[in-house]
Image (tube, rainbow, N blue to C red; front, side, top):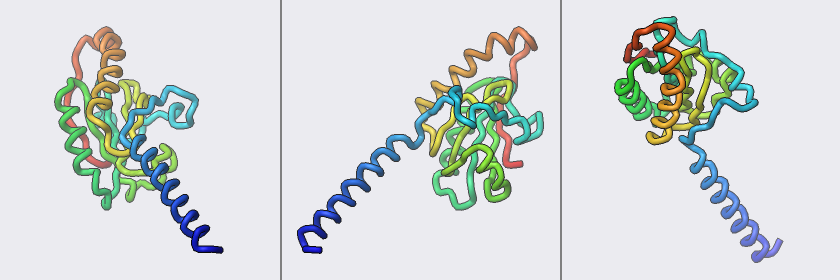
Length: 166
């Protein structure tokens, strides 16, 4: 291999790595609807916490690990969002304690956040720390869709708060 060919290969690899990095960075923290035909959209999250751990209107499930550098900031963001909305709670799952859940919910990175509706069905998924505007928009969509149903069926608003790892 000549020097010119070696330099060309190195430059090509650097360009490819840059493109892959930009694409991955663009996708991190973006909301992905779980309403499609993916395996995760058919899953329910009924057994992640006790019944009182779930929010009456919506639940934010954060999958994290002890070595996750971005998880504490995500925890604070989710707590702040949950505190601003009636009937929304946060559950944190430590994947080091429950590795089977990583397979079950296709968690490829931490933090991963799932937005559950009042029926504990997965509505939205965030790979990486959620972007605040997208998190708020997804949560508002769930709350708007569920507010009419929840008020009709119970007649009372839910509670706010957070729930730590089970």
